[in-house]
Length: 326
Image (cartoon, rainbow, N blue to C red):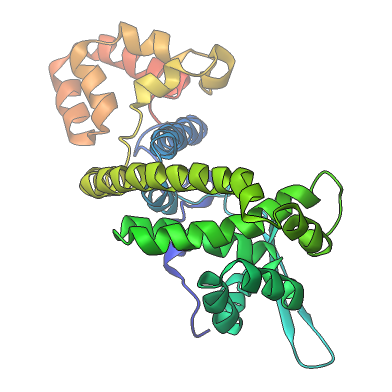
């Protein structure tokens, strides 16, 4: 299927962990140990991701999430629902819903493109022209997209060092924003409050409260631009660290450590013995055989130990699940 990204399937871990068994560990104990290892990986990724998100490093957090191994418990979940509505006139509305938040996928970009001339004219309009444009083009300028447009572009221009254009955008954006603020407590469409807003500030002498709002907004933009530059610098500096965190897989939990995390009932072997208790009673050389699954080493140890003692230990390993009897 053209355009489909299959790369996530490279991260799938096989169901029931059957292909990652310790070579001589009892099968049921193997499955439990591997699932604990898998859970530990999940916890490490969650912890690292939380740190990145808290630090505002959202792109690195997303890359780390994309490295998360997929398995039966997390491969299928509803991340978002998308609705595409085709109208009779041939137009299409594309909306995505994540959780309780609904937003347009492409309408903001289309809005800017479709209304570029009006947005540009409003940016350079004087007070009276602004009034006329808000009345004539209220269906455009009183949209949330217009409000967001002037805020975002003002921030971008300040970050580029274009202070004059930022101040112009901020002033025109505040006309829209303050009309929105006037309409909100009345629960009316902002477009309905355009005449009242301009009547309130009819005389230049009465516009001091409006200008105060503009000045406050300009200070906020300047402060936010400084912070955003710092954030971008920190993000750039942390790229290598985040990439390393995303690519370095968490170390598997050792078998002994995993068994300690189980309850005694969970780890009980097929013969009714506790593998931890059995392991701790083994001679060191037999413990090494168990850890490595080295059959040749086990054979060597068998020839060196007293046969009765070896058989006693070996049988207890089988009954506790430390060694497969098959």
